[in-house]
Length: 193
Image 1 (cartoon, rainbow, N blue to C red):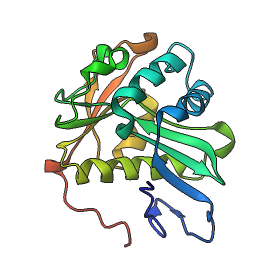
Image 2 (cartoon, one colour; image 1 turned 60 degrees about the vertical axis):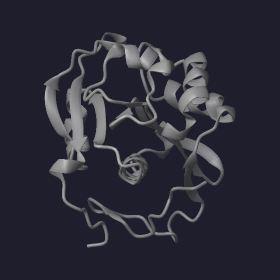
Image 3 (cartoon, rainbow, N blue to C red; image 1 turned 90 degrees about the vertical axis):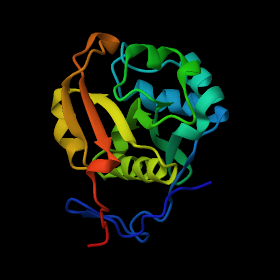
């Protein structure tokens, strides 16, 4: 199932048109995608922060519906994933224990958003984020939550996320910032303007 409906959405100064990326698709990942997801993750994050293959397999077995994979000409080049929870911030136990996923939870978390280095700078991460936001809206979530490094706060703010400050998470030994996109704080965004 493809969630990609963007044909001319404006993201910053970039415009994505079917003529420019005719072979671009976003779909729900399956357990069979675990190795591809691991490959994308391992070239996108430091080893201490990256999700391992076994953990991807565990997550996909429990919440594959919370994984999107971006393919360019049939090749996986990007991903976004995270479990659903009632917590308004991500805690480290969520990364390690797939059984904490609550399919009826209020918040869609974002554990990872990654695009392989050779395909970066084309707005693919933004497309994945927009699809995940739309998916969460369609599922009647309260919003989305994530942690990010300080340098990425402005990237997420462009989608409406608010920074809540330094996170309690110490995942991978890094300093993280809690971010929340609360749909109650947002009006409808018209991407066709």
